[in-house]
Image (cartoon, rainbow, N blue to C red):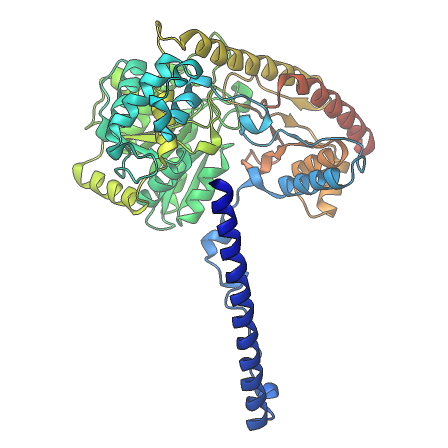
Length: 533
């Protein structure tokens, strides 16, 4: 039957192709006739035709787009992709045999395996007809089958290919709210949750709502994840930087934030919000709860919206530190809905799950009036809804298998194996950086990155200037061309003027880390010898 249908389809396509050729030929003859007639009627028409210009040029683009930059996928990555193509088409064309991507938090692209329970539930939800098959019981765990039924019952029509409510499927938001409540010990309302395609669209949404003009400012940490500078630029606002203290392990001092706030006010900037990334990106620090309390008090006193980027909440590698959500901290201080406006961001892309391509996440919005919430919902509804697979994953991340579930032990083994390996990789790379001449690297307490500082020789800085590039980008480009290792220059994240850094992920698989250390060590020694003052 399948061969018959395919054969019928081929015959139909062949007939259609022949008809198109005839039609094309006829149109071509007709156009030739008309054009020749046109030439006879007006012999000079071709010479008189005005010179056409492009409908759009770079100079005519929205200047906010031109101002926006995103270093994580910038020039260095473009060079890496070219080198990778050269290695594929001409093996042995370089001194290295593979590109080692240490530039972006994309775990599964570097070999990290997805969590089995999460993928089983997703598969069953996307193909529900197999739930009724007897062989399914032997292929999938009992709790993944049960969870899939629960989720499908929450989706109108059990259709994962249909639009959902613009905030996300209500039953999934119920699950997420229950997960937040279990994590924090304080109530969470599913109506406060907006499911989004990862955390990035949620950040864009809040910037769109908060920024009215370039006179509106957003306090951002420096170094910062370039999403924030890019989003502020795209929406026409002003980034107000506050500098993290590298000498104290990238500490966040409210006195520094206060100083930058007052400086912005003196320039006529109305500061609307404070961004805090915890655990830090690109800096990898985990805030102490006492520090978080000071930040909450600061935002309350100054009337600022607190934008809490908490996407690395599962990535804490040191026993002396623990993740505390800003929601938990503010509620433990006795502050409620009327005291502080807080937006918390979470994503399925990070943690131990690393499901970047599934584009799932949410923001929890608290401390806003009903009128403001209506506007937030309106902006969300313009995008219709986030993708359903991402919504399902967000609910699974906040409600994984529990003690007694069939998948619990295998889930814990997978989760703990990933997190313990990340901790080992972080320590190995940290030690390697600190062993190199002129490089210092703070302890990797959390997240997925290290942000070492490099003291570049004056001769290297002059060489960078001659090539019209910033010194840390000069270093990273030469490293890539010599070793195939992809790092991101610190200038793409912001840094104290006169200092140079780069960001390195800890995500290449553990068996690749020794090669990275060896290549980096050899390159750095040669680089320093070449440019030594």
